[in-house]
Amino acid sequence: MNLLIILLATLCAGIGSVWLAAALMRLGWQQGTGGESRGLAEQHLLSLAAGALLSTAFMHLLPEAMQSGRAAQPLFATLLVGLVFFFLLDKAELWHHGHEHHHGVEGEHQRVHDHAHGHDHSHSDSHAHADAQAPRRAGGWAVLTGDSVHCFGDGVLIASAFVANPRLGLVAAFAVLAHEVPHHIGDLAVLRQSSASRRAALVKVSLAGAVTPLGGLTGWWIIDRLAGYLPFFLVVASSSFIYVALADLIPQLQKRLGARETLAQIAWLLLGIALVIVVSTLAHE
Image (cartoon, rainbow, N blue to C red; front, side):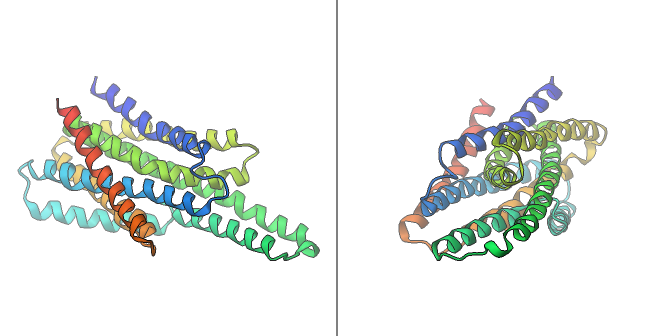
């Protein structure tokens, strides 16, 4: 029964986050001419995700690991090793791909700038088009590869939480769902440039999200045989959530904003924390 719940939760977190991202894009969160409002909406999602991840790591995963009776020093050493490990994965472009989303936005801004200033590059249009298509295709595969590895890792981490405590597993699944939505919005935006249609881009990202249940199954199988090391798996899950929040999400929020926008960021961050508390309370009941 526990395995079935793990598979359902990882399926909702993996594919559900893709479809939710597509729905938000269809509602205009990533469309239209209001670039400023579009950016603020994106920041709201990033703030909410950061709050959910930090709350899950510091209020649920780490306390659960500490309550196992293990000595604090090896657990904190595992936390440190985990942070370094995810940093190295990030350097290998296998854990996050925010840089590619950034490049895609920069390219769009450049095209808008050229159009606004009447820049004409028709004399080399065919060469420029050919040069542009290759990186887009390569970038699309890089996004799918990084997304698949990341989703597999998410599945393992969710399974670790479920094995420790079903309530903890639901909280972890919600945190993964929250932080995958803004990432998948970026994935879909990048892949729409290299795919034949929006549906093709959605199918590709959904297939990457479908790797999450595979990670859940693998995590359940491994942890079932290494139950004594469960506290360390929980600490590794914490290091993943902390790294994503502090190294990937929050730096994207460090922009010069007015007082109202800054307060909105804080409000959405607190909302992410509050939602984790609500999910935890409902699951406990």
